Image 1 (cartoon, one colour):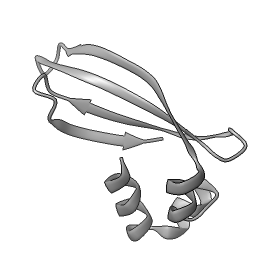
Image 2 (cartoon, rainbow, N blue to C red; image 1 turned 180 degrees about the vertical axis):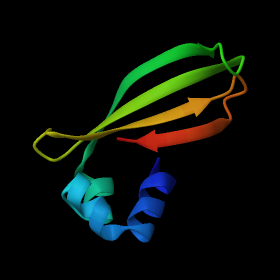
Image 3 (cartoon, rainbow, N blue to C red; image 1 turned 135 degrees about the vertical axis):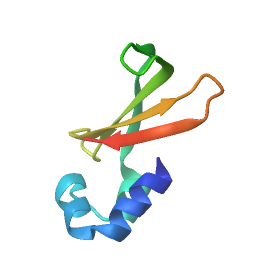
Length: 84
């Protein structure tokens, strides 16, 4: 997740600051990261089994900024991640 946030900030600092309401340093040092959900999933169309992990990101006052989602195969290798 740190790599994802760092890449997002490097590629589009304005978009990052609009969504997160703070700089990358502030987000990494002061924001809260909550384990929100872990589930085992099956994509019937692609015949793919995977593990979904969601992390809720909130600011210093605990107001929601976004959710970070990572998908892992059963060997725990991440193959996709999104933020929204």
